[in-house]
Length: 543
Image (cartoon, rainbow, N blue to C red; front, side):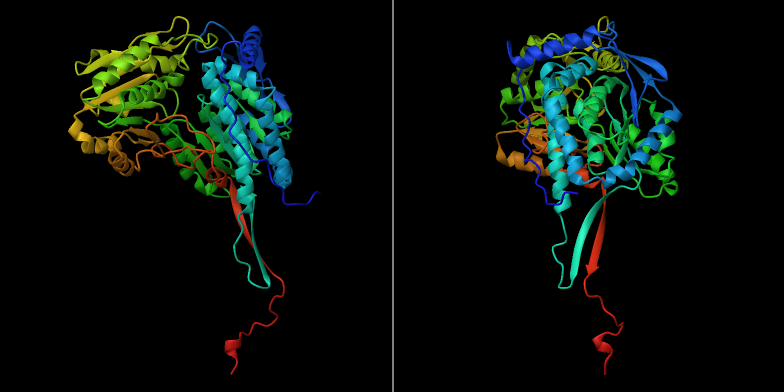
Protein backbone atom coordinates (compact mmCIF):
# COMPACT_ATOMS: atom_id res chain seq x y z
CA UNK A 1 0.00 0.00 0.00
CA UNK A 2 1.11 3.56 -0.65
CA UNK A 3 2.51 5.38 2.35
CA UNK A 4 2.66 9.10 2.96
CA UNK A 5 1.06 12.10 4.60
CA UNK A 6 -1.13 13.33 1.77
CA UNK A 7 -2.38 16.87 1.23
CA UNK A 8 -5.80 17.16 -0.42
CA UNK A 9 -6.57 19.94 -2.91
CA UNK A 10 -7.32 23.23 -1.16
CA UNK A 11 -11.10 23.71 -1.37
CA UNK A 12 -12.60 26.83 -2.91
CA UNK A 13 -16.27 27.69 -3.17
CA UNK A 14 -17.72 26.65 -6.51
CA UNK A 15 -18.41 29.61 -8.80
CA UNK A 16 -22.13 30.30 -9.24
CA UNK A 17 -23.04 30.43 -12.92
CA UNK A 18 -25.51 33.15 -13.89
CA UNK A 19 -27.57 31.46 -16.67
CA UNK A 20 -27.96 34.75 -18.51
CA UNK A 21 -29.43 34.91 -22.02
CA UNK A 22 -27.29 33.18 -24.66
CA UNK A 23 -24.92 31.72 -22.04
CA UNK A 24 -23.50 28.23 -22.51
CA UNK A 25 -24.86 27.04 -19.16
CA UNK A 26 -28.36 28.30 -19.97
CA UNK A 27 -28.41 26.36 -23.23
CA UNK A 28 -27.14 23.20 -21.51
CA UNK A 29 -29.77 23.50 -18.77
CA UNK A 30 -32.57 24.08 -21.27
CA UNK A 31 -31.51 20.93 -23.12
CA UNK A 32 -31.39 18.94 -19.86
CA UNK A 33 -34.88 20.14 -18.91
CA UNK A 34 -36.28 19.21 -22.30
CA UNK A 35 -34.70 15.77 -22.18
CA UNK A 36 -35.98 15.10 -18.65
CA UNK A 37 -39.52 16.08 -19.61
CA UNK A 38 -39.38 14.00 -22.79
CA UNK A 39 -38.73 10.66 -21.09
CA UNK A 40 -40.62 9.10 -18.21
CA UNK A 41 -38.23 6.95 -16.16
CA UNK A 42 -38.51 4.26 -13.51
CA UNK A 43 -36.31 5.03 -10.50
CA UNK A 44 -34.87 2.07 -8.57
CA UNK A 45 -33.76 1.70 -5.00
CA UNK A 46 -30.04 1.02 -4.57
CA UNK A 47 -29.34 -1.79 -2.09
CA UNK A 48 -25.88 -3.31 -2.07
CA UNK A 49 -24.94 -4.05 -5.66
CA UNK A 50 -28.57 -4.28 -6.80
CA UNK A 51 -30.95 -1.79 -8.35
CA UNK A 52 -34.36 -2.76 -7.02
CA UNK A 53 -37.46 -2.22 -9.16
CA UNK A 54 -39.90 -3.90 -6.78
CA UNK A 55 -42.68 -2.64 -4.55
CA UNK A 56 -45.61 -0.31 -4.85
CA UNK A 57 -45.28 1.94 -7.90
CA UNK A 58 -45.68 5.63 -7.07
CA UNK A 59 -45.60 8.72 -9.29
CA UNK A 60 -43.40 11.81 -9.42
CA UNK A 61 -44.94 14.92 -10.95
CA UNK A 62 -43.50 18.46 -11.07
CA UNK A 63 -45.12 20.59 -8.34
CA UNK A 64 -45.65 23.36 -10.91
CA UNK A 65 -47.16 20.99 -13.50
CA UNK A 66 -48.93 18.18 -11.68
CA UNK A 67 -50.59 16.91 -14.87
CA UNK A 68 -47.19 15.80 -16.24
CA UNK A 69 -45.84 12.40 -15.18
CA UNK A 70 -42.08 12.75 -14.76
CA UNK A 71 -41.14 9.37 -13.28
CA UNK A 72 -42.20 6.39 -11.21
CA UNK A 73 -40.45 5.02 -8.16
CA UNK A 74 -40.95 1.88 -6.10
CA UNK A 75 -41.93 2.01 -2.44
CA UNK A 76 -40.39 -0.66 -0.29
CA UNK A 77 -41.51 -2.21 2.97
CA UNK A 78 -40.04 -3.61 6.18
CA UNK A 79 -38.05 -6.24 4.32
CA UNK A 80 -36.50 -3.52 2.14
CA UNK A 81 -35.13 -1.76 5.21
CA UNK A 82 -33.74 -5.01 6.56
CA UNK A 83 -32.02 -5.73 3.24
CA UNK A 84 -30.49 -2.24 3.20
CA UNK A 85 -29.14 -2.65 6.74
CA UNK A 86 -27.70 -6.07 5.88
CA UNK A 87 -26.06 -4.67 2.74
CA UNK A 88 -24.56 -1.78 4.71
CA UNK A 89 -23.15 -4.03 7.42
CA UNK A 90 -21.75 -6.42 4.80
CA UNK A 91 -19.85 -3.54 3.21
CA UNK A 92 -18.63 -2.10 6.50
CA UNK A 93 -15.35 -3.94 7.06
CA UNK A 94 -13.89 -3.25 3.62
CA UNK A 95 -15.06 0.36 3.60
CA UNK A 96 -13.72 1.37 7.01
CA UNK A 97 -10.41 -0.36 6.24
CA UNK A 98 -10.01 1.47 2.95
CA UNK A 99 -7.22 4.11 3.24
CA UNK A 100 -8.70 7.52 3.91
CA UNK A 101 -7.16 9.05 0.79
CA UNK A 102 -9.03 6.50 -1.34
CA UNK A 103 -12.31 7.46 0.30
CA UNK A 104 -11.41 11.12 -0.23
CA UNK A 105 -10.73 10.56 -3.92
CA UNK A 106 -14.20 9.13 -4.47
CA UNK A 107 -15.95 12.21 -3.13
CA UNK A 108 -13.55 14.63 -4.79
CA UNK A 109 -14.30 12.89 -8.07
CA UNK A 110 -18.03 13.15 -7.37
CA UNK A 111 -17.61 16.90 -6.83
CA UNK A 112 -15.91 17.27 -10.20
CA UNK A 113 -18.63 15.21 -11.89
CA UNK A 114 -21.32 17.47 -10.43
CA UNK A 115 -19.31 20.54 -11.44
CA UNK A 116 -18.87 19.28 -14.98
CA UNK A 117 -20.81 16.64 -16.92
CA UNK A 118 -23.65 16.24 -14.42
CA UNK A 119 -24.19 19.92 -13.57
CA UNK A 120 -27.09 20.50 -15.95
CA UNK A 121 -28.66 17.13 -15.12
CA UNK A 122 -28.68 17.60 -11.32
CA UNK A 123 -29.95 21.17 -11.69
CA UNK A 124 -32.68 20.13 -14.12
CA UNK A 125 -33.75 17.30 -11.82
CA UNK A 126 -34.01 19.74 -8.91
CA UNK A 127 -35.94 22.26 -10.98
CA UNK A 128 -38.47 19.68 -12.15
CA UNK A 129 -38.80 17.54 -9.04
CA UNK A 130 -38.66 20.28 -6.40
CA UNK A 131 -39.81 23.33 -8.42
CA UNK A 132 -36.72 25.49 -8.03
CA UNK A 133 -35.85 28.18 -10.54
CA UNK A 134 -32.52 28.00 -12.37
CA UNK A 135 -30.62 30.21 -9.93
CA UNK A 136 -31.96 28.49 -6.80
CA UNK A 137 -31.10 25.10 -8.32
CA UNK A 138 -27.60 26.29 -9.22
CA UNK A 139 -26.74 27.56 -5.74
CA UNK A 140 -28.17 24.39 -4.19
CA UNK A 141 -27.84 21.29 -6.35
CA UNK A 142 -24.59 22.34 -8.00
CA UNK A 143 -22.60 24.79 -5.88
CA UNK A 144 -23.52 23.91 -2.30
CA UNK A 145 -23.36 20.19 -3.01
CA UNK A 146 -19.94 20.53 -4.62
CA UNK A 147 -18.76 22.68 -1.71
CA UNK A 148 -19.95 20.10 0.82
CA UNK A 149 -17.97 17.36 -0.89
CA UNK A 150 -14.75 19.33 -1.32
CA UNK A 151 -14.72 21.09 2.03
CA UNK A 152 -15.71 17.93 3.92
CA UNK A 153 -12.66 16.15 2.50
CA UNK A 154 -10.55 19.04 3.77
CA UNK A 155 -12.22 18.90 7.21
CA UNK A 156 -11.67 15.15 7.33
CA UNK A 157 -7.91 15.63 6.96
CA UNK A 158 -7.93 18.30 9.66
CA UNK A 159 -9.67 15.88 12.01
CA UNK A 160 -7.17 13.12 11.29
CA UNK A 161 -4.31 15.59 11.82
CA UNK A 162 -5.44 16.46 15.35
CA UNK A 163 -3.06 14.57 17.64
CA UNK A 164 -2.01 14.83 21.29
CA UNK A 165 0.50 17.68 21.61
CA UNK A 166 2.72 15.84 24.10
CA UNK A 167 4.48 12.49 23.93
CA UNK A 168 7.01 12.30 26.81
CA UNK A 169 10.34 10.61 26.28
CA UNK A 170 9.82 6.89 25.78
CA UNK A 171 6.12 7.22 24.92
CA UNK A 172 4.20 7.83 21.71
CA UNK A 173 0.65 9.14 22.16
CA UNK A 174 -1.69 9.16 19.20
CA UNK A 175 -5.39 9.27 18.37
CA UNK A 176 -7.19 7.43 15.59
CA UNK A 177 -10.66 8.34 14.40
CA UNK A 178 -12.74 5.21 14.00
CA UNK A 179 -16.06 5.12 12.16
CA UNK A 180 -19.06 4.41 14.35
CA UNK A 181 -19.75 0.81 15.32
CA UNK A 182 -22.80 -0.01 13.23
CA UNK A 183 -24.67 1.86 10.47
CA UNK A 184 -25.87 5.44 10.12
CA UNK A 185 -29.41 6.35 9.05
CA UNK A 186 -29.63 9.44 6.82
CA UNK A 187 -33.10 10.97 6.65
CA UNK A 188 -33.12 13.85 4.17
CA UNK A 189 -35.62 16.61 3.24
CA UNK A 190 -37.18 17.79 -0.02
CA UNK A 191 -35.99 21.37 -0.06
CA UNK A 192 -32.25 21.07 -0.71
CA UNK A 193 -30.60 18.60 -3.03
CA UNK A 194 -27.29 19.56 -1.40
CA UNK A 195 -28.57 18.46 2.00
CA UNK A 196 -29.83 15.21 0.50
CA UNK A 197 -26.33 14.60 -0.85
CA UNK A 198 -24.44 15.78 2.22
CA UNK A 199 -26.20 13.85 4.99
CA UNK A 200 -25.31 10.36 3.72
CA UNK A 201 -21.96 11.30 2.12
CA UNK A 202 -20.49 13.13 5.13
CA UNK A 203 -21.03 10.08 7.33
CA UNK A 204 -19.75 7.73 4.61
CA UNK A 205 -16.67 9.87 4.05
CA UNK A 206 -15.58 9.20 7.64
CA UNK A 207 -15.73 5.43 7.03
CA UNK A 208 -19.34 4.73 7.97
CA UNK A 209 -21.94 2.77 6.05
CA UNK A 210 -25.34 4.36 5.49
CA UNK A 211 -29.00 3.62 4.96
CA UNK A 212 -30.45 6.69 3.20
CA UNK A 213 -34.15 7.54 3.01
CA UNK A 214 -34.93 10.78 1.13
CA UNK A 215 -38.22 12.65 1.16
CA UNK A 216 -40.47 11.23 -1.56
CA UNK A 217 -40.69 14.71 -3.11
CA UNK A 218 -36.89 14.75 -3.63
CA UNK A 219 -36.43 11.25 -5.09
CA UNK A 220 -36.09 12.47 -8.68
CA UNK A 221 -32.85 14.36 -7.88
CA UNK A 222 -31.75 11.80 -5.26
CA UNK A 223 -31.55 9.25 -8.05
CA UNK A 224 -29.05 11.46 -9.91
CA UNK A 225 -27.03 11.91 -6.71
CA UNK A 226 -26.74 8.16 -6.33
CA UNK A 227 -25.81 7.65 -9.97
CA UNK A 228 -22.94 10.12 -9.61
CA UNK A 229 -21.69 8.63 -6.32
CA UNK A 230 -21.52 5.22 -7.98
CA UNK A 231 -19.83 6.58 -11.10
CA UNK A 232 -17.28 8.26 -8.82
CA UNK A 233 -16.36 4.84 -7.46
CA UNK A 234 -18.42 4.48 -4.28
CA UNK A 235 -18.44 0.73 -3.50
CA UNK A 236 -21.81 -1.06 -3.41
CA UNK A 237 -23.46 -1.14 0.00
CA UNK A 238 -21.68 1.89 1.45
CA UNK A 239 -24.74 4.08 0.83
CA UNK A 240 -28.04 2.27 0.33
CA UNK A 241 -30.86 4.40 -1.07
CA UNK A 242 -34.36 3.24 -0.18
CA UNK A 243 -37.90 4.64 -0.52
CA UNK A 244 -39.95 3.51 2.45
CA UNK A 245 -42.64 5.16 4.55
CA UNK A 246 -41.04 6.90 7.52
CA UNK A 247 -42.70 4.95 10.36
CA UNK A 248 -42.00 1.66 8.57
CA UNK A 249 -38.32 2.52 8.22
CA UNK A 250 -38.13 3.77 11.79
CA UNK A 251 -39.69 0.66 13.23
CA UNK A 252 -36.88 -1.46 11.80
CA UNK A 253 -33.96 0.93 12.16
CA UNK A 254 -34.60 2.16 15.69
CA UNK A 255 -34.96 -1.38 16.97
CA UNK A 256 -31.77 -2.67 15.36
CA UNK A 257 -28.80 -3.36 17.68
CA UNK A 258 -26.33 -2.00 15.09
CA UNK A 259 -28.05 1.39 14.78
CA UNK A 260 -25.20 3.84 15.45
CA UNK A 261 -26.55 7.25 14.51
CA UNK A 262 -29.00 9.37 12.58
CA UNK A 263 -28.22 12.34 10.32
CA UNK A 264 -31.50 14.19 9.95
CA UNK A 265 -32.98 17.31 8.41
CA UNK A 266 -36.73 17.77 8.65
CA UNK A 267 -39.51 18.84 10.98
CA UNK A 268 -39.07 19.44 14.68
CA UNK A 269 -41.99 17.17 15.57
CA UNK A 270 -40.55 14.21 13.64
CA UNK A 271 -37.09 14.73 15.13
CA UNK A 272 -38.45 14.89 18.66
CA UNK A 273 -40.38 11.69 18.06
CA UNK A 274 -37.23 10.01 16.75
CA UNK A 275 -35.26 11.16 19.79
CA UNK A 276 -37.95 9.81 22.11
CA UNK A 277 -37.97 6.46 20.29
CA UNK A 278 -34.19 6.17 20.49
CA UNK A 279 -34.34 6.94 24.20
CA UNK A 280 -36.95 4.26 24.75
CA UNK A 281 -34.84 1.72 22.85
CA UNK A 282 -31.45 2.77 24.20
CA UNK A 283 -30.91 -0.58 25.93
CA UNK A 284 -31.14 -2.38 22.58
CA UNK A 285 -28.10 -0.76 20.96
CA UNK A 286 -24.46 -1.83 21.01
CA UNK A 287 -23.42 1.81 21.43
CA UNK A 288 -25.05 5.12 22.27
CA UNK A 289 -26.28 6.43 18.88
CA UNK A 290 -25.23 9.82 17.58
CA UNK A 291 -28.30 12.01 17.09
CA UNK A 292 -27.66 14.90 14.70
CA UNK A 293 -30.55 16.97 13.42
CA UNK A 294 -31.37 20.29 11.79
CA UNK A 295 -35.08 20.97 12.10
CA UNK A 296 -37.55 23.86 11.84
CA UNK A 297 -37.26 27.60 11.99
CA UNK A 298 -39.33 30.73 12.44
CA UNK A 299 -36.66 33.05 11.18
CA UNK A 300 -36.75 36.78 11.79
CA UNK A 301 -35.67 40.08 10.32
CA UNK A 302 -35.46 42.89 12.86
CA UNK A 303 -35.13 46.42 11.51
CA UNK A 304 -33.84 49.25 13.70
CA UNK A 305 -35.14 52.82 13.14
CA UNK A 306 -31.73 53.68 11.66
CA UNK A 307 -32.03 51.03 8.95
CA UNK A 308 -32.09 51.78 5.24
CA UNK A 309 -35.56 51.01 3.88
CA UNK A 310 -34.21 49.64 0.59
CA UNK A 311 -31.95 47.21 2.47
CA UNK A 312 -34.84 46.08 4.66
CA UNK A 313 -37.31 45.51 1.84
CA UNK A 314 -34.76 43.66 -0.30
CA UNK A 315 -33.80 41.43 2.62
CA UNK A 316 -37.48 40.65 3.15
CA UNK A 317 -38.42 39.97 -0.47
CA UNK A 318 -35.41 37.79 -1.10
CA UNK A 319 -35.31 36.20 2.33
CA UNK A 320 -39.01 35.38 2.47
CA UNK A 321 -39.86 34.47 -1.11
CA UNK A 322 -36.83 32.85 -2.77
CA UNK A 323 -37.74 29.22 -3.31
CA UNK A 324 -41.25 30.04 -2.18
CA UNK A 325 -40.16 30.45 1.46
CA UNK A 326 -39.34 26.73 1.67
CA UNK A 327 -35.82 27.17 3.03
CA UNK A 328 -35.24 26.28 6.67
CA UNK A 329 -33.72 29.75 6.95
CA UNK A 330 -36.45 31.70 5.14
CA UNK A 331 -37.56 34.97 6.70
CA UNK A 332 -41.08 34.43 7.97
CA UNK A 333 -41.50 37.12 10.64
CA UNK A 334 -40.36 40.73 10.52
CA UNK A 335 -40.30 43.57 13.04
CA UNK A 336 -40.30 47.01 11.43
CA UNK A 337 -40.24 50.40 13.23
CA UNK A 338 -43.25 52.64 12.56
CA UNK A 339 -41.10 55.41 11.06
CA UNK A 340 -39.68 53.00 8.48
CA UNK A 341 -42.78 50.96 7.66
CA UNK A 342 -44.37 53.24 5.00
CA UNK A 343 -41.21 53.15 2.86
CA UNK A 344 -40.65 49.42 3.41
CA UNK A 345 -44.28 48.66 2.58
CA UNK A 346 -44.12 50.72 -0.60
CA UNK A 347 -40.91 49.03 -1.70
CA UNK A 348 -42.23 45.54 -1.08
CA UNK A 349 -45.49 46.20 -2.91
CA UNK A 350 -43.52 47.57 -5.87
CA UNK A 351 -41.14 44.62 -5.97
CA UNK A 352 -43.80 41.96 -5.47
CA UNK A 353 -45.90 43.49 -8.24
CA UNK A 354 -42.98 42.93 -10.61
CA UNK A 355 -42.32 39.33 -9.61
CA UNK A 356 -43.46 36.65 -12.03
CA UNK A 357 -44.74 33.28 -10.84
CA UNK A 358 -44.97 30.10 -12.87
CA UNK A 359 -43.11 26.98 -14.05
CA UNK A 360 -39.36 26.66 -13.52
CA UNK A 361 -38.75 26.04 -17.22
CA UNK A 362 -39.58 29.71 -17.88
CA UNK A 363 -36.48 31.50 -16.59
CA UNK A 364 -38.39 34.77 -16.08
CA UNK A 365 -40.27 33.27 -13.13
CA UNK A 366 -38.85 34.29 -9.75
CA UNK A 367 -41.47 32.29 -7.80
CA UNK A 368 -42.52 28.72 -8.58
CA UNK A 369 -44.81 26.18 -6.92
CA UNK A 370 -44.78 24.91 -3.35
CA UNK A 371 -43.78 21.29 -3.00
CA UNK A 372 -47.11 19.47 -2.68
CA UNK A 373 -50.86 19.68 -2.35
CA UNK A 374 -50.53 19.07 1.40
CA UNK A 375 -48.32 22.14 1.71
CA UNK A 376 -50.60 24.15 -0.58
CA UNK A 377 -53.72 23.34 1.46
CA UNK A 378 -51.97 24.17 4.75
CA UNK A 379 -50.82 27.57 3.48
CA UNK A 380 -54.21 28.38 1.95
CA UNK A 381 -55.84 27.64 5.31
CA UNK A 382 -53.61 30.11 7.14
CA UNK A 383 -54.07 32.77 4.46
CA UNK A 384 -57.86 32.41 4.59
CA UNK A 385 -57.81 32.66 8.39
CA UNK A 386 -55.76 35.85 8.16
CA UNK A 387 -58.22 37.35 5.68
CA UNK A 388 -61.08 36.65 8.07
CA UNK A 389 -59.31 38.17 11.10
CA UNK A 390 -60.19 41.83 11.72
CA UNK A 391 -56.83 42.44 13.39
CA UNK A 392 -54.87 41.33 10.33
CA UNK A 393 -54.16 43.14 7.07
CA UNK A 394 -53.14 41.44 3.83
CA UNK A 395 -50.50 43.85 2.52
CA UNK A 396 -49.69 41.88 -0.63
CA UNK A 397 -50.64 38.59 -2.26
CA UNK A 398 -53.15 36.41 -0.48
CA UNK A 399 -54.20 34.45 -3.57
CA UNK A 400 -53.51 30.88 -4.64
CA UNK A 401 -54.31 28.50 -7.49
CA UNK A 402 -53.87 24.71 -7.78
CA UNK A 403 -55.33 24.16 -11.26
CA UNK A 404 -51.96 23.70 -12.96
CA UNK A 405 -49.55 23.50 -10.02
CA UNK A 406 -49.32 24.26 -6.32
CA UNK A 407 -49.00 28.04 -6.69
CA UNK A 408 -49.21 30.38 -3.69
CA UNK A 409 -48.80 34.09 -4.41
CA UNK A 410 -46.10 35.70 -2.22
CA UNK A 411 -48.11 36.98 0.71
CA UNK A 412 -47.32 39.69 3.26
CA UNK A 413 -49.48 39.82 6.38
CA UNK A 414 -49.42 42.75 8.83
CA UNK A 415 -50.56 42.02 12.38
CA UNK A 416 -51.19 44.06 15.50
CA UNK A 417 -50.39 41.16 17.84
CA UNK A 418 -46.69 40.15 17.87
CA UNK A 419 -47.80 36.70 19.02
CA UNK A 420 -50.32 36.16 16.22
CA UNK A 421 -50.28 32.55 15.01
CA UNK A 422 -48.31 33.23 11.82
CA UNK A 423 -45.63 35.01 13.87
CA UNK A 424 -45.08 31.85 15.90
CA UNK A 425 -45.95 28.83 13.73
CA UNK A 426 -43.63 27.54 11.02
CA UNK A 427 -45.57 27.62 7.74
CA UNK A 428 -42.76 26.73 5.30
CA UNK A 429 -44.13 28.72 2.40
CA UNK A 430 -44.23 32.18 0.80
CA UNK A 431 -45.95 33.91 3.71
CA UNK A 432 -44.26 36.74 5.61
CA UNK A 433 -45.84 38.25 8.72
CA UNK A 434 -44.90 41.81 9.75
CA UNK A 435 -45.31 43.47 13.12
CA UNK A 436 -44.85 47.24 13.22
CA UNK A 437 -43.46 48.56 16.51
CA UNK A 438 -43.02 52.06 17.88
CA UNK A 439 -39.50 53.39 17.38
CA UNK A 440 -38.86 53.76 21.11
CA UNK A 441 -39.76 50.11 21.79
CA UNK A 442 -36.59 48.56 20.34
CA UNK A 443 -35.48 47.06 23.66
CA UNK A 444 -38.89 45.52 24.24
CA UNK A 445 -38.92 44.11 20.71
CA UNK A 446 -35.60 42.39 21.32
CA UNK A 447 -37.23 40.45 24.15
CA UNK A 448 -40.28 39.62 22.01
CA UNK A 449 -38.11 38.36 19.13
CA UNK A 450 -36.17 36.15 21.51
CA UNK A 451 -39.23 34.58 23.14
CA UNK A 452 -41.78 34.35 20.32
CA UNK A 453 -41.12 30.84 18.98
CA UNK A 454 -39.50 27.57 20.02
CA UNK A 455 -37.01 27.88 17.17
CA UNK A 456 -33.53 29.35 16.96
CA UNK A 457 -32.24 28.80 13.44
CA UNK A 458 -31.56 32.09 11.62
CA UNK A 459 -32.24 35.77 12.08
CA UNK A 460 -30.95 39.17 11.08
CA UNK A 461 -30.64 42.73 12.34
CA UNK A 462 -30.75 45.62 9.86
CA UNK A 463 -29.33 48.82 11.30
CA UNK A 464 -26.92 51.69 10.66
CA UNK A 465 -26.45 52.17 14.42
CA UNK A 466 -23.50 50.12 15.71
CA UNK A 467 -24.73 50.36 19.32
CA UNK A 468 -28.06 48.87 18.23
CA UNK A 469 -26.25 46.14 16.31
CA UNK A 470 -24.13 45.28 19.34
CA UNK A 471 -27.18 45.26 21.61
CA UNK A 472 -29.19 43.01 19.27
CA UNK A 473 -26.24 40.66 18.69
CA UNK A 474 -26.00 40.08 22.45
CA UNK A 475 -29.73 40.05 23.27
CA UNK A 476 -30.48 37.55 20.47
CA UNK A 477 -27.42 35.34 21.02
CA UNK A 478 -29.60 32.28 21.69
CA UNK A 479 -32.33 33.14 19.17
CA UNK A 480 -30.41 32.16 16.03
CA UNK A 481 -27.58 29.76 15.29
CA UNK A 482 -26.86 31.77 12.14
CA UNK A 483 -27.12 35.53 12.75
CA UNK A 484 -26.87 38.10 9.97
CA UNK A 485 -26.10 41.81 10.16
CA UNK A 486 -27.53 44.00 7.39
CA UNK A 487 -28.51 41.03 5.24
CA UNK A 488 -31.28 38.51 4.70
CA UNK A 489 -31.22 35.47 7.02
CA UNK A 490 -30.68 32.97 4.18
CA UNK A 491 -27.81 31.89 1.95
CA UNK A 492 -25.25 30.23 4.26
CA UNK A 493 -22.20 29.14 2.28
CA UNK A 494 -20.10 26.06 3.07
CA UNK A 495 -16.71 27.09 4.41
CA UNK A 496 -18.00 30.57 5.24
CA UNK A 497 -21.07 30.27 7.47
CA UNK A 498 -21.45 26.79 9.04
CA UNK A 499 -25.19 26.17 9.30
CA UNK A 500 -27.41 25.05 12.17
CA UNK A 501 -29.51 26.22 15.08
CA UNK A 502 -30.40 25.21 18.60
CA UNK A 503 -33.57 25.20 20.73
CA UNK A 504 -36.33 23.63 18.61
CA UNK A 505 -34.21 24.03 15.48
CA UNK A 506 -31.83 21.16 16.09
CA UNK A 507 -28.59 20.01 17.64
CA UNK A 508 -26.53 22.84 16.05
CA UNK A 509 -23.86 20.50 14.73
CA UNK A 510 -23.11 22.94 11.92
CA UNK A 511 -23.27 21.35 8.50
CA UNK A 512 -20.43 22.60 6.35
CA UNK A 513 -17.85 22.49 9.14
CA UNK A 514 -15.49 20.12 10.93
CA UNK A 515 -17.96 20.10 13.84
CA UNK A 516 -20.43 18.00 11.88
CA UNK A 517 -17.89 15.43 10.71
CA UNK A 518 -16.66 14.91 14.27
CA UNK A 519 -20.06 13.40 15.07
CA UNK A 520 -19.42 10.52 12.67
CA UNK A 521 -16.22 9.23 14.26
CA UNK A 522 -15.38 7.60 17.56
CA UNK A 523 -11.81 8.45 18.65
CA UNK A 524 -9.47 5.87 20.11
CA UNK A 525 -6.46 6.97 22.12
CA UNK A 526 -3.35 4.82 21.74
CA UNK A 527 -0.40 5.03 24.12
CA UNK A 528 2.70 3.10 23.15
CA UNK A 529 5.55 2.70 25.66
CA UNK A 530 8.89 1.83 24.08
CA UNK A 531 10.81 0.64 27.15
CA UNK A 532 8.13 -0.45 29.64
CA UNK A 533 8.84 -0.99 33.37
CA UNK A 534 9.89 -4.47 34.45
CA UNK A 535 9.45 -4.05 38.21
CA UNK A 536 6.34 -2.89 40.03
CA UNK A 537 8.37 -1.05 42.73
CA UNK A 538 8.44 2.75 42.65
CA UNK A 539 11.47 4.68 44.03
CA UNK A 540 9.45 6.04 46.97
CA UNK A 541 9.14 2.51 48.35
CA UNK A 542 12.90 2.31 48.99
CA UNK A 543 14.31 3.05 52.44
